Structure formats: C-alpha cells, structure tokens
Image 1 (cartoon, rainbow, N blue to C red):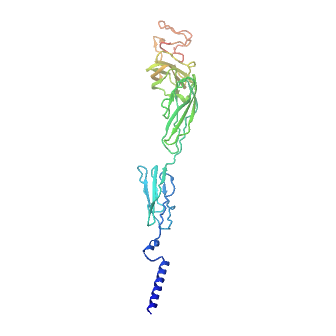
Image 2 (cartoon, rainbow, N blue to C red):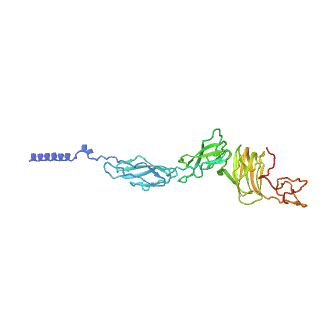
Image 3 (cartoon, rainbow, N blue to C red):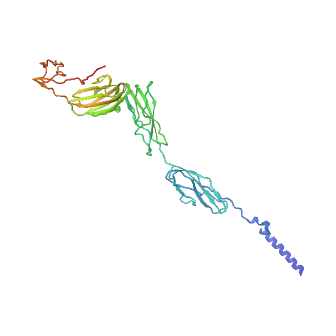
Length: 390
C-alpha cells in the first residue's frame, strides 16, 4: 500500500513539472522569458514649409507611429521664432496643431511622442515665412531731343511697385558721345539732371529696387542737338515774375517761355547779378538759337536787357547761353508802360525818338519834317539795347 502511494506521488510530481514546463512557468531560471519586449516609437513632425507671413500654419504629426501599436501622446514645441514674434501653438498636444506666422523669418518646431514606455524627439521642421513680393517696374521717361548744353532733367517718377514698397533709384550712363564729360547729378534721385556738353546721343539706364528685388533695367535716349531746343526742357516764365539763382556751365543752353495772353505797351526781359557771363537771346514764336533771334544784347557780364515795344500776344522764348560758366543770375520778365510824348510850346519832345520816316530829329532844333504826322512816336527795332557790346 505504501509502495502504491509513493508511486502515485511520484507520478503526480512528474505530471506537475511537465505541465509547468509546457506553460513556461517554473523556477526562477525561466522568469525573463515571460516579459514582452517594447519597441521605441517614431516621431515625425512633417515636412519643411514655406508660407505667407500672416497665414495660419498647420503642423502634421500623422507620420509618427509605434511598432507595437501603442497609443501615442504628442508634445509639440516652437524652439525658435523670429525676433519680435508672438507666435504660439494652438494645442501643443494635438496631432495637427496650428500657429500664425506673424513675422517674416524662420520658425523651428520639434515633436516628441510617447508610447507610455519611451519618449522620442523628432528631427526639427523648418517653417519659412515671407511676404509675397513682386519685382518693381522702372520707367525712365520718353526719348527726346534737347539742346546741346541745356539742362536735362530725367524723371523716374512713374516707376511702380505692385506691393506699394518704397523704391530706390539707380541711374547710370550706358553711352555718351565721344569726348563728352557729362556727369549725372544725384544718380540715386528720382529726377537727376545732367548737361549734354557735346551734340550726340546719350543713353541713360534706370534700375529701381524695393529692397528685395530689383527691376529690369530700362533706358531713355536723349539726343542733344546744337542750337536746338525742346519744350520738355523749357521752363515757363510768368509775366512780372523774377527767377533767381539761375546757373549754367560753359556753353550751356537754358530755355524759357513766356506765354503773353494780354495786350501790353512794352515787355522787358532782363538778366542781372550773379557771377560769370551769360548771354540773353529773345525770340517770338520759336526758341532762339545763336543765329536766329529777335534780340540779343551780347554784352560782357550778366546785365543784359531786351525791351520789346507793343509785343505780340503769343509765346516769347528766352535762351540763356553760357558764354562762360555763370551762377546766381536773376531773370526778369515784366510789362512796362510807355510814357506819352510831352508837348512843349507847340512842339513835341522828340529826344531819344525817331520819326516815322526813320529820321532822327536834332534835339537842339526839334523841327518836325513835313512828311511826318503831327505826333511823334517811339519807333524802335524789336529790342532797344544799351551797354558796351563785345
């Protein structure tokens, strides 16, 4: 009986051990095989983005995953933003948080994911924000003909920028006539000037910039003609007006125009003051040249006057020619009233006057010729000129 019990007990022990071995149980030596091995999750913060400043940026962590299919927790962080930016994430623990790129510049974002056992950090993602910018368009004005030596004013004022950005200007000569010493005055100004010192073609380029992009270069062609003129370079004069500080270099040509719309007794056009030597030329209807004019005193210095009796209504043109370089000169255009002749003891005062037949009376014996009217008149050439001529 005892033998049977021992045999039964031994069989039972063998059975239990076999069961435990089959189930992976048992002693301490087999304990490690019961633990599950955890794989690290993978964090993916999405692709780099280029966005418009002021727009909403949407981040994307959907590329993150866990090999063990564990549920992931997300944690986003803006690690770098432009100076002055107040950008913040809408929900740092969301799969797709957002923020506003409020300033131009770069925003750096990182994502960490956690599967409950391990937290992993992503590579940084770069968000570049900038304002959409259009290249400006340069306009250098129209091609034109000018007088050789006359002041030329360029005009880039119609250049434009679609974004309304402030423009800077850069003018430069592409070509000038051989032996010309022309120089642009203030080449970064909207309206620079130069004197075409030699007849020929002057080509000037203009490039404008909005601070980020530059325009394509454009060019304007200025053709300088000796003795010529252009209304685009003719300054308007007003009757009974005075211009001051008029200046020009040697052999320069400056044109002015007086539009006379009323009947007046006389017109006085004069230069005065300053330094150097300027010559005054006046002509009715067309710009004067050095050969074609109605009046030119042609005196030394700057004090020259043209007096025109009963001037016709219309356009009177004035040319100031730099016989030498000059500056600080005044230019005057004014109406004058001619004095009525004075009768003395039945005779007329005829001093400084002519009869209608062109003869000049003797001041000591003022006898009126028979072939004249009883009224002496002041008859002059288009200009009465005084002074010492060259």
